[in-house]
Image (cartoon, rainbow, N blue to C red; front, side, top):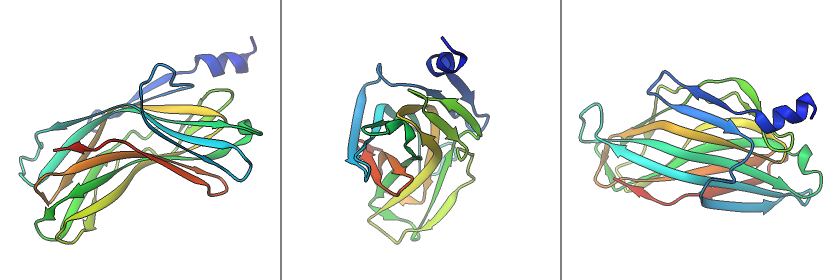
Length: 211
């Protein structure tokens, strides 16, 4: 087996972020994962582009700041992509992980969103020569949104990275998020978005998680 083929079949890495213990594992397939949601489009080159969420679990925890207006969670699971069809190995694009956050009301018309992800800046192999270039998974300090007094839904793009080839996945453990300034029951819906180099876009939304 050549060095290149050996790399494709054996590369697997784990990174632990010091900020709020957020971690990611990268690999070349998700055969053992339980798929929670998926969605597929056919791009302009007749290739099937699939976005996948698998093994998703969101654990809500008591807020560290003790604020009754804060909702805090840890996200575990897998975000994956698969490409098939003509010249699938030449496909290039971007993967984005995020949430829709729904709430009945806010205290002052503003909410603050925070999330933490590792900053890796490394290239790792995926399936059949695929490449995951995770150059944008960096810790964030937070974002204040003019949300109105509610009810409302905010879409948060938490992390993204360049991808290419036929398949690959990002496995998350302890991906941390919180929202402050909300009143009442709050819903979290995770999503994975895949955007091809020519702009073709597919999004898969997971189930609702409620606190």
